[in-house]
Image (cartoon, rainbow, N blue to C red; front, top):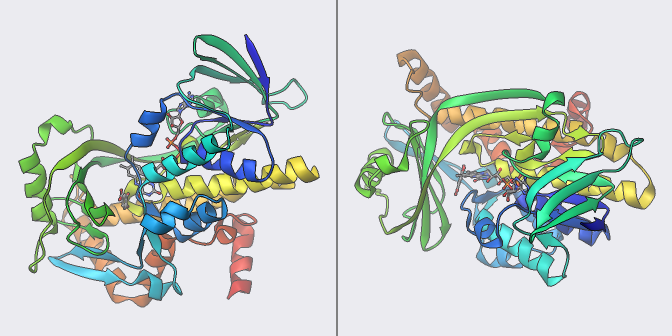
Length: 413
Ligand code: FAD
Ligand code: DHB
């Protein structure tokens, strides 16, 4: 048995765990990161692509923004397509110059792994059978993480455990009897493809169409990323390349505009769900990112919420370790959940407005279209979409808690 000590045991090397490790290292706090998968697997897992302004700021301040600044694509707007026409939402103009950056989650993860390994800080891939214990009552023993690695049993004794192990991880499961779950499932999924072709659009196009939702996104000037609404539990085997392209053309083309085809290098189907497990703190276990909450991808919020959680957590842990001030840890869950619920509502709203529910009647379809027409014709509605999409400032939604946010906003004007 190998016994080791650290201040923070981080479970999971997705964006949440890796960024938390980075922020703690910058604050002089020790951490060990344990990841179930291999480095190759984690670096190749294609997922999010849209970073909020605040996420970019955090990555830059953490010293991992160089490649992001060189290769990321700044987008000051998006298009909404419906009723056979495309409408531009000028997010930068509506939000006083804020924008999103298109930069793949794979690249964020690669940058964070490279930075951690360059400093020779502990990051263990392919850990097996991770079990957590001793975090519930700080009076009764210390948080312990047991796991297998390289054929040996390990015991990691920590002061705090950060559960950054995603939706299917072990941390939330360990406290399952103590969490309050709020959730929605949706009667559709997303089929995503990565394509070696220049995007035919300068900004993302979210399209509602009688055949279903589609999204035209990108990863670089030479790589497109596209999504199609499909049935839940849909098998990718049912979707030939011809069928994918014909549906993308049907849902996106028009007015002389056409999706640009090319070789498909990756394809997969992602289920859609909304999910919140509260609270996010259980004794000395802190849940962060997808381990605590999931949003449907339509609002591009999942990765950004993970970044917001660990930014709040890293600051709170620095107060705890450096100043002995536990108040920020005590409010961690409430502050994160305030932001999480704003993103939950925004993601649910974007999803229901843009997708075709297979059971939708004429009334439901007209409501969604009316909402879209209102968004593209009212500056107030477009601004509401834009400020949520580019991301509300951390201190406004991860502030003092729901009751006092209104007061803070009133002061902000
Ligand atoms: P994860 O990335 O899931 O990382 C958790 C890590 O923990 C994984 O590496 C996992 O292997 C590891 N792990 C699990 N169990 C264990 C265990 N027992 N022991 C050790 N390690 C374990 N979000 C956006 O913001 N913008 C977007 O544009 C966007 N688009 C998306 C598109 C798709 C198709 C998908 C699937 C998601 C998208 N998201 C988007 C969501 C985003 O990808 C997630 O919210 C994000 O990955 C959450 O990061 P995380 O670190 O919390 O969790
Ligand atoms: C991407 C994913 C999203 O969920 C979204 O809303 C926008 C873009 C993407 O993968 O590029």
